[in-house]
Length: 158
Figure (cartoon, rainbow, N blue to C red):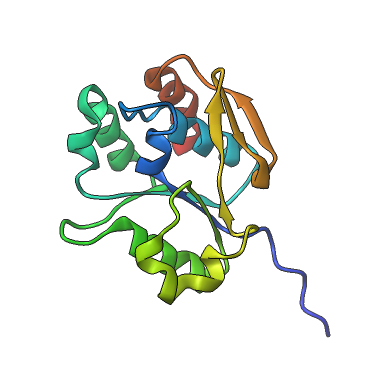
């Protein structure tokens, strides 16, 4: 008896990396918008953040804490550990893919197969308030603010 084909891979979003896709001041606007879009598509997805994210997000720290409290789709790694390594390990273990523009040079030796695979390390960007991640066929308008992105995501948190 043949096994059914595997489902789509789990998607790991490098949350703080995406938070910088619009410029020097990080914002949850981009990672929340992508998370919402992928959940609406029925994808298995999780955001990863370093423990210092709450300090780097400035005015959006409260929104970030709400996300952590209410979402099974968000992981904050413990202080002293780096989200990159834990996220790459989890993605490797399940055959998942990572959305980030990070090149992960510090992890190249250990996670070369994932990092060198353009179908598993997916870059993207924001231009004219549109979020594009070609490897996921995502091309969408961004919500105007992180609060609007949160309002769109919140009903999906259960």
